[in-house]
Length: 341
Image 1: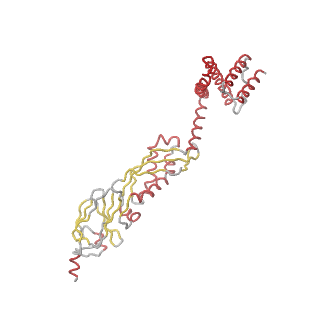
Image 2: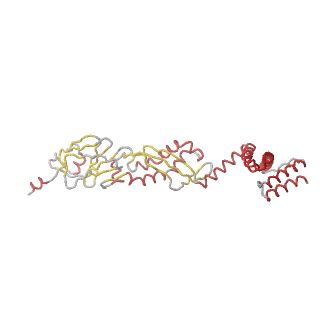
Image 3: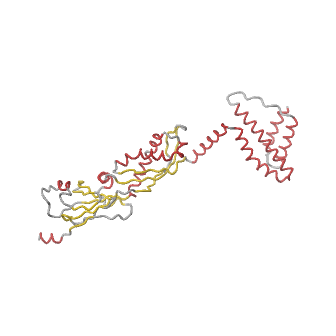
């Protein structure tokens, strides 16, 4: 009866795995009730590692190549099974294959803005995203920490955990790089390198090697970006107020000309002249106001009565054309009449 049972048994002569390209990181060879034939062959392809597990204990690890399974090639398993001589009968053991090729184009990104300290703004909330690549470096650690006894373990199952590790170390990367937020966009390579260095130990603890990190974009939430734009604008104004006012006036002239176009060539000229005059008045007033911050502003130069009357006439024409509202005209008129007094 024992002889018949032995004859009915199926024995495995060749153990191998061909990856299907579905993102599988770990795969258990299907043993069923079969046993491994003594002297059988284990075929491990490039970018693969095979691990024998006996009764839950990790045994021998095999790299790329064709291996004949004997007590000489299975020293740890031989010890675990207490083989004191060459075994002649088949044996059972779980065999796991691990893919050690690069897992590229893995995406990471902030689903919510991440708060970081910044030397310029004190603290900002930034958004960032990019790619990274990794591979299995230590199959034993990956088996015990991640994949376990599952029949198959894929990149999709690991994706969320790895993305979380990347985001967890963004603040550390910014701090270690010492790069202010305003310079991050121009130093994305340095920031990506800092993020890789900060995150690599966490990957290594899982048996993985973080091979590369790329940064594709870094930005602020929309409401903070508007505040930053205003601050940048004020910085530009502070550097050259005269140029800024000239620029704003030049931008306003076409609108004055467009509104005055209905009055013919003379009306166009008058509207254009009024626009320039208003721009000059605005530049003078704004310049004096900024110069007077923290100190008494110098008294404005006296205007000639005929100039003020001429300007009032032009303002009245702008009001008639609908360019100035009644309230705006009344306010400007009151200011000019005070100068006459």
